[in-house]
Structure formats: structure tokens, C-alpha cells
Image (tube, rainbow, N blue to C red; front, side, top):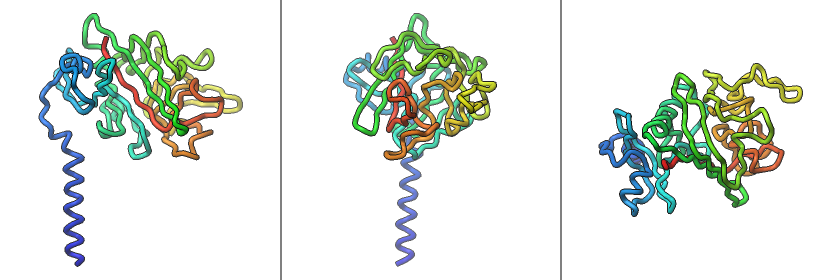
Length: 264
């Protein structure tokens, strides 16, 4: 009896391991420079994992493509729960982590490659948000790109449009995240030395955000890589999935978020 249970459990574990590593064993046959090109060449392409090779990149890599009516979008961040921890250090944020079909961060080096390869082309970045009450919102930015690693993958965005508000530029002056480098707990680029919030002095924004990496500027009002909080525990936390121009004054942690790029 126990031998049979052990054997069945072992089989289940092996199946799980096979499923987790299957993406990594998929032959890297390049299907396009990005999801936008794949959708353009194959209008009936459906959402899923594809292999891309942006211009100027020597090694292809896998991404999740969200194929929508307005084109193919390359997803570089997805949060839907607490299964994947986002309190990671610089090297991991550079490389990427998580499951492409589920919650993940694609990697700063890959996002850089996607936004800096082609001449005469620019990228649009879209943030999708979901709350716990059944509502959704989005923020979209033109001319999105990242700086080099030496520039700490500095954030560059153009004009905003959307329904969530421009949280990257902030609810008030002095916290614009545009033009700031990416920060993690082991690589601080947030401009706080310290930042004073009432009677609180903040030296490193990433720590207050549960270790989540982001383009902090005096902490700012956008941060989607903090701790994920479940329903009933999503209001009032300093850490969370924050887009403060979308909700009220009390910190509200979103139920889910998605960040993606489309070349134009």
C-alpha cells in the first residue's frame, strides 16, 4: 500500500518537473524579432510562448506574446498572486524569473534588447491593472525604452494616455520616475539620501516595497513589484502593487498587473 502511494507520488513529482522544464527544452527556432512582428506576419497568431531574436541580439530567447486586435504585445511583467516572489536582487531582475505562462519578470537585459534594437522604430508600453472589485484600468506610454546597464536600465517614456492615471510621473511634483535607473535592495538608484515623508526618513525605496525592484524616484507613486496582498488585506500597506493615481489616497494593492511592449 505505502509502496504504491510512494510510487504514484514519485510519478506525479516527475511529471511536475517535466512540465516545469519543458519550456527550457523547447528548440529555439526564431519566429520573429518581437511579438509585434509575429502578429503582423501571422495575423491569426494566438497568445502564447514564442521565440524571438531582436535586432542586434546574438541569442534568441522565449517570451509570452499577448496577441490582441491592435497587434502583438511582448509581456515583460505579470502578477496575479503570491506564488512568485518579486523580492529579488539585481542579477535576477537583469536575467528574469518566473514562468512565462504565469507570473514572471522577463528580465531587464531582454527589455533593453526589445526597445533598443531597431532603427526608426519605437516602442509603446502598456500597463494593465485589475482590482478586487471587478474593475480594470490601463496606462499607456509612447517612446518607451531602457538605458544601458551602465545607466542602470534608466526608464524613458513619452506621452501618456489611459484610464489609470500617469503614476510614473506621479501624483505631485518631485517624484517623476521618468529618467531614473532601476533599483533593487542591492543596487540603489532612487535618489533618496534620505527622502523625508512626514516623520519618516526613507533611504532605499526597494526595502519599503518588500524588496521589489522598480524605477523609484523619491519612491514615487508607481510600483508594481512589491508584495502581493490578497483580498481583505490589500488596503493600507506600504508595500504592494501600487498605481496611486488609479485609487484613492490610502495605499491600494492591485489584484493583478501586466506590463507589455509593442513596437511601432
